[in-house]
Image (cartoon, rainbow, N blue to C red; front, side, top):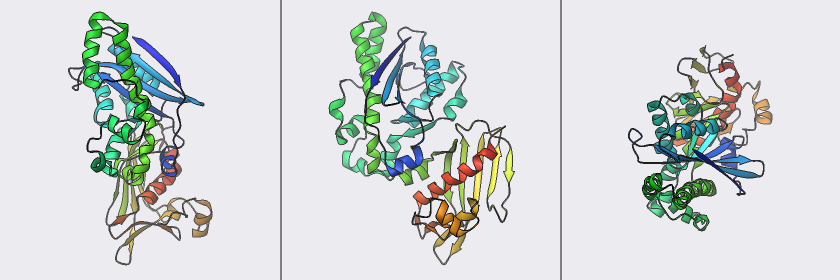
Length: 346
């Protein structure tokens, strides 16, 4: 197995919406190359990781030079991913992470909990479901997004994933340095270009996307958020917080929420009672849930009062059919920061 490392200088990306969810997280770009689409019959031959460092990025690739080195590639990949809080992928939820997990299972490689504790910021479903780009571009292949974002000229490789497979099979027979460089360049450009297209999120409704797909907060990973007729419900699994303890708390006047956590499943559930105001507004008592003694203290100290859907210490979950995704997500981040230390196993 060969490791290749390249130091790069790329523009970073920040926006108010993006930083709300990811501003304090260590985000690694992640992409793999395989000999096919079915992990039961195909191998992982190359993984690429782009890690941020102070003032620059490191592009790290783990390459299988000979048959029988796949396990080494996977082990080194896992070792590096353990350093991350989040991975940035393109269709990583549909392919890269499930492929890696299946290969680990078939080769009896431990570490599945490390993958479960890693949040996957997958741009593909966000662009597909929470932006107008599907109608604009038709195909949402990563290279099409690169053209749309004006960074296509920064890509040097000229092959696709299918050709990469053919070249690798030829490489196993010849060990040609030229073939090796073409395979590595394809993966190298994929991870760099994926970081460059991150500003595509400015074209997306990121708050709605995070509500729908979940997001990391306080070492937990929210997996489901629902507004029902009389409550806000959230499910989460442990992330970088580590193991959870068995925990249950019933609603009280000072903390009106049902909280349940399991050490066996490493998951937790939150049920926030809400009430209707008038005919269409559904609200919950955010000030009490976040531990503020008064509406005035909430307004002055929470940092949430400037959002439109927070009114007099209450969070308006929805008005008619309009769900306030931003404010719900911001409230859950604040609440999890308060409750997460109580859920962590000692």
